[in-house]
Length: 460
Image (tube, rainbow, N blue to C red; front, top):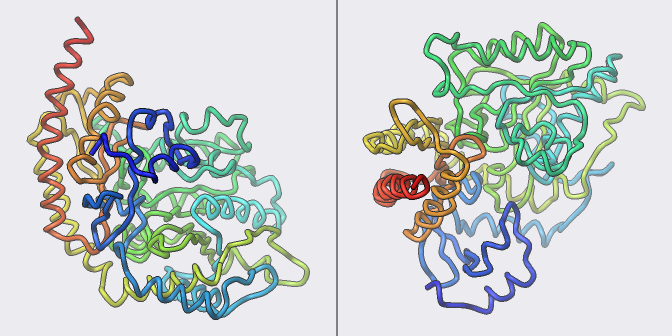
């Protein structure tokens, strides 16, 4: 297949600038062109089938090829293709805002629509600043997030993001970001207090001076670094810390909402109520671009009177077609009980991944719901990780391409330590887990052998 070329290949290589992509990689390789999707599977331009073990990018929650979603979009386009939410409303944005408010926890009843996740995070930080200013505390502008966390790519969201390699090329960034340790206890000493990472947030707030801190933003399960789950009581401690210092808590659920970890919203799984939730991706199962900030009534309150205004917006926030798609998507999640399905099947997914722990390269398995990661190590006993050159060879030199060649799409990443990530559509079950294992086990076994040989050769 490598020697085959198509008209699409030539056009892609000439005109398409892909995201987060080493474009030079395609000088002597084909661009993977995904042409069709059906359920848990996608097909490339040649008709080869792949198991989509990542839901495209943690987002096609109801699976591919749902014609009812396209039909909902077409009906809306025929009725009203677009109108803005700048001083106007339209029926779908009203209906979707109400539906989200009904599903969201506690008093999170106000919905501010965006076009996607970075925009939602950007908007939440701006709203936190505006909220404090409206209440007479304009010095509260800083935001605290975690090491290795990914919160988006716009300049504010990039400040919040805790991945140095993404930040460095675009510095200086928006001022005001502070970063604290994450919850990766695999790398902690055994005698460490389990709520150490939560207490580190209080230390950061105190160091920055509480009267300058607007918000803390955390994912229920942290994506960057590979599906870090919170310790028991972590979010309760963080909520206490935020309340003690008058700081807002933002739950970044761009990935962890809409059933991904078994609940409508990930904060429900861990029993905390944030002041705001940011969401996107699975809100439409990615059939259309849409994001939102869901704010508590007390956050919205200062902006609901007289001449007050949250002076912010996006042309396509709450697009009628995207809102119609979201409503149809939520109907599917509800009708098919996909949140419950995730809770019933996550044990089987975890067991399958944990069964790989007999391989010398598998150090840790972690995550929640249909959002799991395997951390790869050089030495299981010492937890020694791969250095930068080894990681490059392991992930880009072999694993990523080989998994794809064998028909499995997942995420290999080394922005922290090397991991393989899985986030299958919520409709997946044992059949798909078995298929993942059938590809993953031999490839990881081969990866370990290759790395042993490569290390020997590079030392020689």
